Image (cartoon, rainbow over the protein chains, first blue to last red):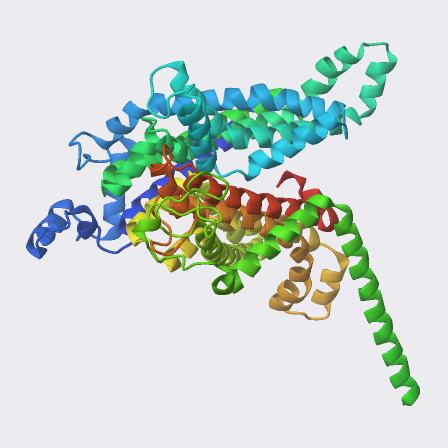
Length: 305
Length: 305
């Protein structure tokens, strides 16, 4: 058990180092980061001067080492636009992104779990067909279009919810549905197939044979076992949602990390881009680590592997 | 001699017959699955639009006519019967732009899927066959890549490199190799211990021969399933990039770009944003349905995808 967690921890650290390499490389893709970082109208002399100041003339490995040390200290440099440390800019926006992600996940689960269970119990019924067609539609709908259509219907036409910004609960609903739709669809399908598998097991017959009510059989025996694979998916989705909020945040002008990153990309504010990408990826790694550890408690069979 | 020739001919005929029967069987199965039929129709329509765009389009998709701007679709007051789905803010015909938009969608997603499929399959074959260091390097790389918020990474790279058709395809291709590599690797791991591989080895077959003549054909069926499902993802990805202004640049019509234009006019002209998204959704839904059907007949174990 301990060695498993230790192994996963080492693995996560390795992945984090890999992420820092990629984040570093992004800026060096064109071969001349100085030209990217300087304003468009900078003279060649200014660029050369800047190149020296920033140490872009040093060997690449040395540059990476400096970047890596900075990352360890949480130092990604100053934002060009806001003359504030890039990391603190990202961290300021983090609560908004986390709020949106959890709201999306909550909506997804509240709808997906019952739909998945009912579809499995009433297999091939109308409810099942409606539920699974809906799930398939949800998986095929592009996030950006869903967001725009929700705005069109609920903000423009019937004016129930505001179309952009953050503040009240009303602001949260449309972005959360938009962001959560894909996870909702995926979780519903997962819940259904997982439930169907459990319902076919021998111990379900035992539970029924010993005289339990159908309700108890399903809620106590089937659901518990069927949730195990769903928990993994939920963990993975949580990480994906944090990073996937980019488009949703852009559409609803939600002041989160994703929108900050997109704006930083357009403004060529690369320290902020690097900080945002690194932090989002790091959170994804941590969430997965936690899910894996949690998993060993839920499903003791994992430890044996 | 003639007996032998006749026998060979007869066998050939038999083979052809058998193939014809098999094809008919598959077609009958396809017909039974209405979702797959719908999927096939969607996919064929997109292909036809791509090839015959100049003949199918009622108008020039790029020609601007300010006098004809923002005509609503047919059936609404103020519509023009020549413009079935109306015109956009520059007086361009929506139907024609949707037809031409299929081109970019299809070309980019096919190229990206081909790129990532070839890359991922080769990596998976090598990883599974050689194991050891090769394997652990590639699999760690896969972990690093999976940790990134996929869309954020793609926009960061394209923002640095510039949004050319080639860059878009490469970036999308690179972000997609992991899933092929993992599935192919797992397949190869179980295949390489089989007797027939040992037999080839005993006969002195080189590693290259084993990999490409004996292992590769066995990983094709699962790869076909992944290719289909990845096509759907790539179409959404391409339109997401276009939506953010990082796809193929205007005036070339793209579905994502049309959506982005339409977003600005959401409060006055709903049709601009509605139709491109609807088309993306239907096409993606169709491909997913076709993919699910292919998975069921080719490789039912891949239900997790």
